[in-house]
Structures are given as C-alpha cells and as structure tokens.
Image (tube, rainbow, N blue to C red):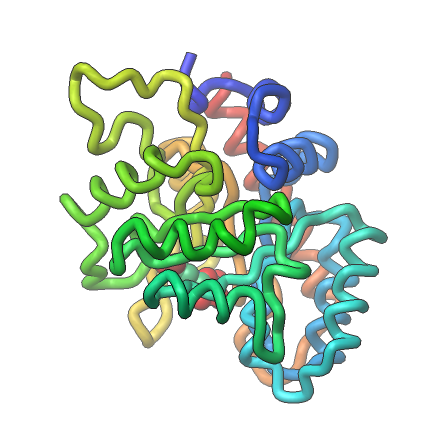
Length: 275
Ligand code: 5BU
C-alpha cells in the first residue's frame, strides 16, 4: 500500500531518516498532524505562543529572522519547550543559493540553524547542488530537508515540470530529502513507468490552511484540513494566523482554543483518509 493509506506509525517504523522517523513517531504519539507557524516578531510572544500550543502540535515552524530581539538564549528556551511539550522544530528558511553559500547559511551566522532545527527547507531552483550543500552540514547531524515542490500562493511558478523535477531531485537524494512543501501527495510524480517508486515515503507538509478564511490580501490561499489531508493526501497541516490571529496583540486563551480545534480537525481528516 502507498504511504497515503498507511498509518503514521507504520511509516515511522520503516523510515530511514532520523528526523522523518521522529516526526512520524511524534505525530502518532500525540495524535497531532498540526504544525503551528509562529510568525511573531517579539521573543517573549514567540515563546508564549509556543508554550500554549505545544501540547497540540507535532512540529513548530519558525522564521527566526523576523524576531527583533533575537539572542542565543531564545533558542535554548525554544529547545526547552520542545522537550517539555514533545515537538520537533522546523526553521522555514527556504534556502535558494549555491551549495557553498547555503552550507554557510545553514551552519553559521547569528542563527546557526543546523544546530537546533530538526527540519529545514530549500527551493529546488539552483539544482541538486543545493541539496548536497545542505546535506554536507545537516546529514551528519541527523537533520532532514524538505524541497519546495509547490507553494500556496496565487500565481505560484512552482507547477508542472518544475514540481516534477523537484520530486526527481528528492528521489536522487532521499537519504537527506524527507519530503516536500506541497499542496498534494507526490507519489509517483515525475516517475517513468519503468521506475519503481513504491518504497519511497516522502512527507508532505502543507501551508495555506485555514478553517475560517480562504486567503489574505497578499496572495495567500487557504484550504481546510479536510481538503488538504483527506482529499489531497498531505501529512502535516501548517497553520499560522488561523491559530494566533491577525489582530494586534495575542489572546492566549483563544490561541489555545484554536490549536486544539485545528489539531482535532487535522486528526479527523487523517482518520478519514486511512479509513
Ligand atoms: P499563515 O498565517 O497560516 O498564512 O502562515 C503560513 C506560513 O507558511 C508562513 O510562515 C509562510 O511563510 C509559510 N508558507 C506559506 O504560507 N506558503 C508556502 O507555500 C510556503 C510557506 Br513554502
């Protein structure tokens, strides 16, 4: 059977990449395929949101470069919350440069992403050298990489043969590439009839998820957990403003309520898919 109909636990048991295995195990243990994207600019607010949504998520997604008062201690506090609430960390860095540069951006600078982020992602646009560059840093640390095969935005150029080439690139580097940011399952995409892809298990993490809105004023498009997980076969829903809101200031009680609501919706959509 394809990864579409297998349980997260079945997939965890045979996944060769340590970060993918840990994510699948966490999803099963917490009955949560919810990743919360914490796109806030103040360190305290960032930690407060994570502490509240922590029990309901398998993964926390960060854009660490938007935090105004970033200091190394913030990462230590993030790691403490990861241990407290049992979730993994995904820095949504979207690397897009030559291998040598991305290796430096991943390992060094102020943020030293590779030292704390279990999963990160990259645009396939430079070609396979972006994967080998990042793998030179991340693979020895047991990290995993997602390729951006599709995007959630209106007018995205990541379609058609670009998406197919992204999947081929992943297949050629499946020791480090654990899956895709995409809007649908990629099983068999870009594969020739002769090629056996039955054993591949790429995780599909999907942003652009909302229960109350269909988009924003800057090109974002939202689909429901049912559309994403049941109908399109994706594995993890990524939710930002649907959980922490769009207004000024954060209502921490509302954040908790929404996190539980999205966790339940994502899990119900998965149970529907596996039947
Ligand atoms: P939102 O508040 O749920 O719209 O936030 C979505 C997050 O996912 C945000 O951090 C984006 O940078 C990220 N994202 C996305 O929305 N769409 C994409 O195709 C990719 C990332 Br790739």
